[in-house]
Length: 225
Image (cartoon, rainbow, N blue to C red; front, side, top):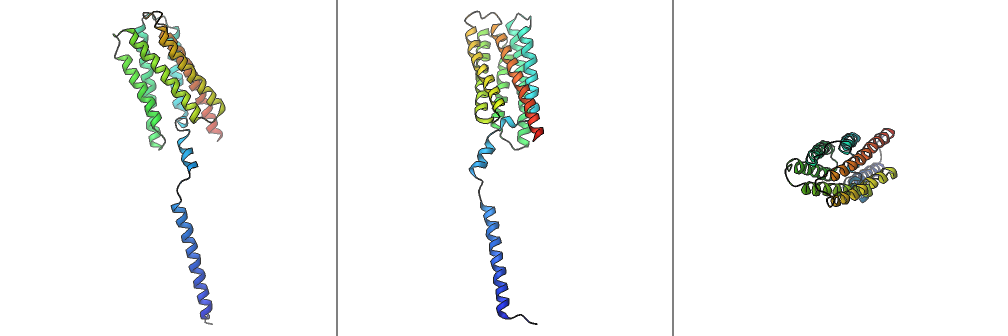
């Protein structure tokens, strides 16, 4: 039985209408730009989403060397300055590894690069200036402690959502900024002593403990997810 021309036309119109709807839906899906919310989420939690081992290793290095600097019997400030240079260089190289890992995973790299650059630059400045006046070393260490404390505070306020982690990073950052001023003013007492290095050792210990805690908490949080 041959279908009537009217029925054939109806079928053709239905198919054409269906094809047009599919085309419109596909076009809308292709052309819809990412929302502002997606952009905001992609820019936040950049640095703190680094692998938990990065924070753990940096924390262990800072804690051990901070303890050594604090309770060492070394009386020469220049020797302790060289040790601080080695510590910062190690932390800078670990941050370079973090930078490479973030580049592979297509995550934000600016902050990681900045931290790595500062650590390595300060380390080289300390290691290459053994024979300069101790006031120069004091200024470099004080400036680094202030800057790192400021960085940690900004990271906490802008990037961390977890209340415990945010509080921890803010306290560590503010502690660093305070000790930076203390180190800067410790030079008024006696530039020949190791007071400013001992104070920096205290900062390293607090910084190390904070990073170890954050590393463990980050690992546990990710495992639960």
